[in-house]
Image 1 (cartoon, helix red, strand yellow):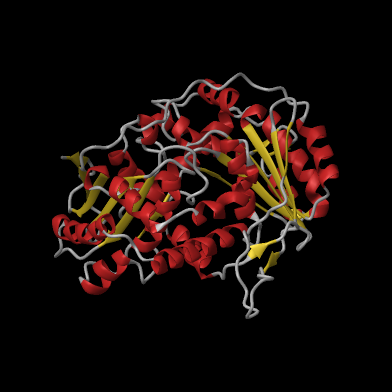
Image 2: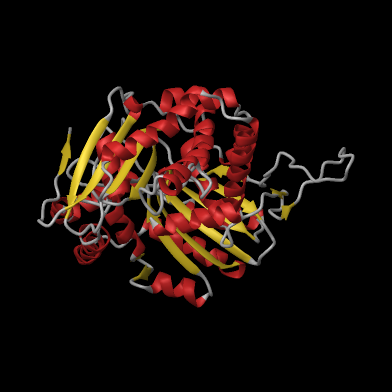
Length: 477
């Protein structure tokens, strides 16, 4: 959570800018401006090359010569949502298994290859994908493409690796959730309360009983089903030559045989029509906490962009409406946080999503008192149009955040959006149309969106209650 908050704060601190097709950041000048002032053109234009190999692998490339490095990412279309029942935490477990190397790069050999070249690496599991990425000097690019192909085609899946990584994941669950005050309250427990579909409403980190029950046959079956070349995207961004890079990808990935078609999966959520309430007793929590969430509009819809404006107005920054009222005026807590997709950003998911808000508050205030104040703030947005000034300020902040993602020093923000849009939409050039979505938002659309999506009957409220015993069950009303 802290990493997410720091990253968001850094993104909002960046000045808005444009980008030319070579990836360099520029300030756009209006040639018709009488006073010589600068204005925003339509805006980010990333040069994108996109192809699909005969075996189904989607390939995204973007050239940026500003720094002599290359960022490589492989995204698999498998995340928390696709886990079968009885196998919670399986996507996360498999992220660790795949990270341990491959037939030609066992153990820490792949890590050594990357670090000895002066590079860095990481990986993660999110709602709708698992990713691995590396940033290396561009003269090491082919070696990294070969290494990722070897990991895809020949991962080490054996009992020793399974036992070791299961232990690592178990330790993560204890360190990050079970033995932490508040644990996964806002990003695990609140979605479990708010959602109805099991795929959106289970313990993403993993139930320990499910992790312990995973057999080697289960692991191999999971790999065969979801980690196929035709369920993957490779993205390469940086100081590259398109034809040369494509030739390396074809050489090393092109011979991998495609897997079977993915099994059908329904992750849809019904329209929520009644407010939900839940309570968690937490013996480690020094103070009570409160979180609430509303179901989001469909990603990419006009209402989705309007909801992003509402997020800016309500919770992003010290001047946000909820921060001003709950913190500065009422003094319920020392801070409030929230946003769209707390496990990523508002762009890199593909399915039902929540807009969530949370705070750790003083014990003298109860749920009903705090939520009555929240309702006063939100109902004003549901009954009155915001001003054009409020809209313009919110969209400026959204552009700044978007530019901050795209212009991250490792280029990971850019490659993350390109790979996500290729994986979800078969259209990585969608990145060049994000700003057009914000341009369509009007005060009237913001009002209509607030009326539908910020209604109390679309809300779930979760309380964390400090206790002195070991109770950890979630109660629902």
